[in-house]
Length: 194
Image 1 (cartoon, helix red, strand yellow):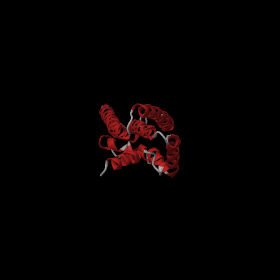
Image 2 (cartoon, rainbow, N blue to C red):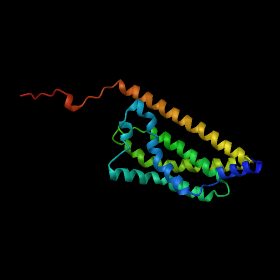
Image 3 (cartoon, helix red, strand yellow):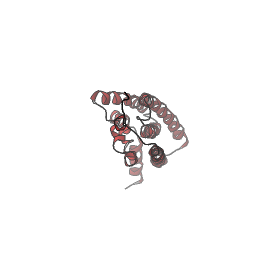
């Protein structure tokens, strides 16, 4: 393999993909569910099934999660000449969504589900922050090979850290919740006084 072939592979690996819309949709729609998977051993299967609502709820949640997907698509289209910015914004968005959806406990209070409205909106902020960081990295790093390494290693480090923090938070919450037993109304011995 010639050095020019290696350079072409590097450039091809970092450029904006042809199926940009599909990648953006997958990030927005699948990550909320994937983010719940690592905490299933500590919180149980209902941790995932909290997000598997009825048909209308599922479509509503999916529609909300398309907000960061649409923004990522716009960033991808505007990053044709500086694709590193797009890839860094994907990583930042994925990291934020994994942390947010992986740590929100919908059963903690009656208003906890409001977070499902704000997580996608804040995901847009994470995407924009990633895009700006990617533009800065693009101007600092001068070769595509170094850019590819930065995206690859940076993605692994950031996503691993986010997963570790999410799992640790989940374990600490479960230990705290175990101290307070749940008593159902049906279990109480109620008697009527005459």
